[in-house]
Image 1 (cartoon, rainbow, N blue to C red):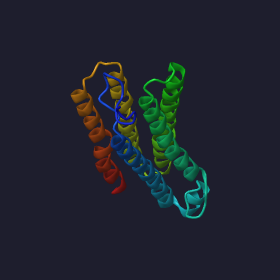
Image 2: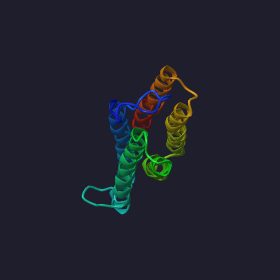
Image 3: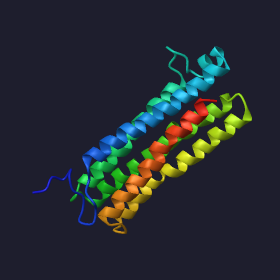
Image 4: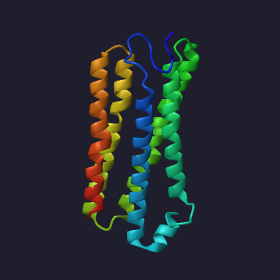
Length: 190
């Protein structure tokens, strides 16, 4: 019999554990990078503002709590989604609850992991040009990260075939996780 962790339902392209592991690391890496960027911007303003924001070494402040919350959201989103995908014959209420928890974790992740650290960076930005660049990065990330649940919904509704789903996830990964590295470098280098 097929392993429930390796297949989804008949129209899906299959639940691939490696894909979830890669998403976990790449999303967590972005969250940590954005929070590090926030720390850097706060420290550039003044050590006192960094300590006040809880971003100085050894001080467990709001920024660290938000980063930890965002990292927990990554895990919750992925584990709830993977479990819902793996439970082929589960009652609909259980699957729907897991998917609702996954989607709620996704939106909390967007808040704690993208919007909040970049908003804090804008507050700490030395000039309006940097603030505008940071707003652009935030808008770009919030927009591109929505591609993943969209592809997932289209795949599970039967609207995409296996090949198109794979290509859509690949395009989403490139847009949401590889291109932002150059955006971070551009903001950080100024």
